[in-house]
Image (cartoon, rainbow, N blue to C red):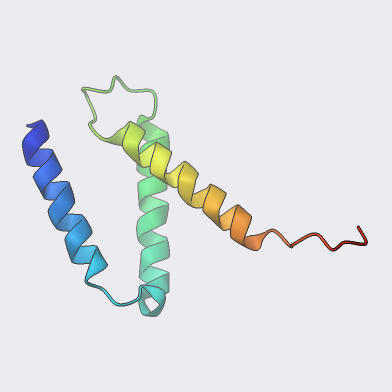
Length: 80
C-alpha cells in the first residue's frame, strides 16, 4: 500500500509541476486548499490508520501558511 501511495504521490507531483503557473487557476486552487484544510482539521485527531495522509496534509498546510506569512512580512527598516 505504501509503495502504491508513493507512486501515486510522485505521479501527482509530476503532473502539478507540468503546470506552468497556478496563478491563472487561483480561485480554484484556493477552493481546493479550503477543502483540504477542512478535511485535515476534521480528521486531525482520528487514528492515523483510519484516515491516511491527514498528518501529511496538516504538515504541508502548516508549511504553506508559514511561507505565506514570511512572504507577507514587511522587511524591517534600519530605522525601526
